Image (cartoon, rainbow, N blue to C red; front, top):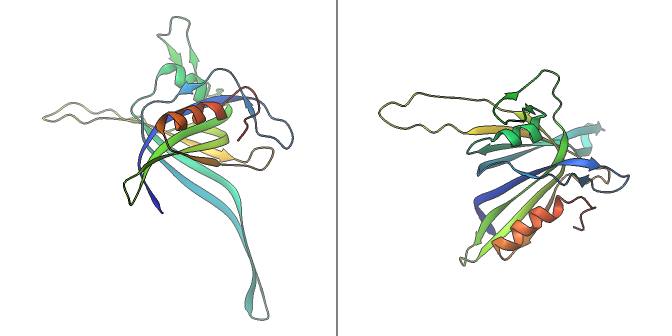
Amino acid sequence: MSKVKMGAKYPRFAPIKSEAANALPTYDTVKVTIGELIAANMTVNLASGELYSDDALNIKVSEFSSATVAMEIDGLEDDVAKALYGATVESDGALVTYNVGDVAPNGGLAYYVQMRDKAGKAYFKGYYFPKVQAAMGTDNAATKGSSVSFQTANTTFTVMKAENGDWMQTELHDTEAAAKAWVDSVLTSTAPDV
């Protein structure tokens, strides 16, 4: 029975510690919750080619090249900016410096979505991207007028293939607790068993 997405939660990021040949990455023990997830929109980029012969299309190839996950969250904490973008947070935590020399680390990204089938049963599907790199989005502010206008934070993750060729894994769960535990389990400091 088909399942429809109706919610998204718990976006987590962990910097890559090591990448072995033909394996998924292992991650630093420092993981961050990016924020409260509003939207996560994935776009897949394919490298395509067509071969025409005898006046007709005879071969068409479309292969994964990269993907992006455009993520909107409620706000971005300073420690998250440090983890995602390589920004510097001073020891007192008050000053955050973004420098042209900052390098956003490669890391793993995971979150889960809530789904329902036509019978009303809830499911939870985890999404795991083994190797991503974050890019800052726009930062907006607006004055308060006769109504309140909320401003949110945007980050776009470029998805790359891991050393074993995997670029995304998903897993369906019956409970939210199981999906949340799965998100944490794939971003471990040992090779994930997924």
